[in-house]
Structures are given as structure tokens and as C-alpha cells.
Image (cartoon, rainbow, N blue to C red; front, side, top):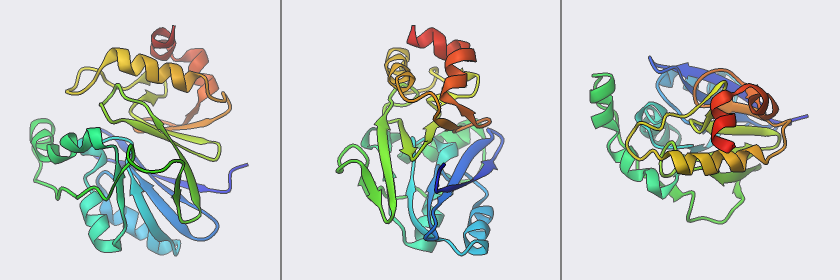
Length: 213
């Protein structure tokens, strides 16, 4: 049984999943904060949570919309793989191309996930960082207790897109092979869509099965 609580906030026209992960000490992590900043802040306040850090699975614009505002408000560190920093800095370009919306603040990355000691310890959280390039060059998954946050590498019934800049089918195949060797009972919380389990995806996700063959 997990000792963490997970709250999902679905953001924007791409239905991006942001997760607020909290522990019994009222500490919280935010994974991939897209839009709906007020909902995130309200949840933290209503549950008396202290924001320890923001950790991102990758740097696509729909996953970073609220990072700069959260960092400013809560003075917390932001973690991202160094190979996705270019995507982060291009967030407004992609927002214009895909959504035509107004610009967002581009945050500084406090810690690069590929240049720090692992596992990642933030307050009372222990986070296994699994490097999973393919959807983007710097994609990662986070394993916290029995929960796997897969970003856009693995989704329920499908896999992440490989038709965007920085995507690579061969790299994603290797990353998915790595994920397939993990404990099948792991709960999977993806960057889009519904929660699932690794075991279920290994049985029914045809794209997943195809790429790990």
C-alpha cells in the first residue's frame, strides 16, 4: 500500500495530466504542471501542503505552462533533464503553433535530472528517476513507491507521439523495453489519459507490445 496521495488536474485542450503527490508530512511534489494554476494553488492551500519541488517528465509546452508561476509563488526548485531544456525554452513557439495562446514565463532549471545523485531525495520523498528518451530526448519516468509516472512515454492503450521534434522511435522502443521489465503490479499515471497498470498495458496495449517485441 502506498503512503502517498495523488491528485490529478487535467489541463487544456490536450488534456495534460498534472499530478500533485503528497505524503503524511504534508509535503508535496508537482509533476508536470500544465495550466489551471489556481486549481493547483487551491489544492495545496486546502490540504495544508508545502510544495517541496516541481519535477517534470519532459519539457513539452503543455507540461510546463505553470512552472514559472509556481516557482515564483512557492520559491521551490524545478527539475528537468538537460536534454529537454531546449524544448522548454521553445515553449512559447510551440504554444503559438499548436494553441495560439498568449506567452508563458520560461523558468530556469534549478537541477538537471541527469546531472544529480540518484535516487532523487526531496524532503521525505525518494524518487527513482528512469531515463526514457524517445518521446523527447530528455524524457524520464518517476517511480515513487509503487507508482510509475510515465509522462508521455507510456499511456493507457497507446504510447507517446514520435512525430514531434526530438522524438525517436528506436529510442522509445528501448525505453519501453526497460519499462516492460519493471514489476507488472506498478500503477501507471501517464501524462495524458487515465490511470492504468503496467501489467494491463503489457497485455492490451498493442502499440506498447509492438515496440517491445
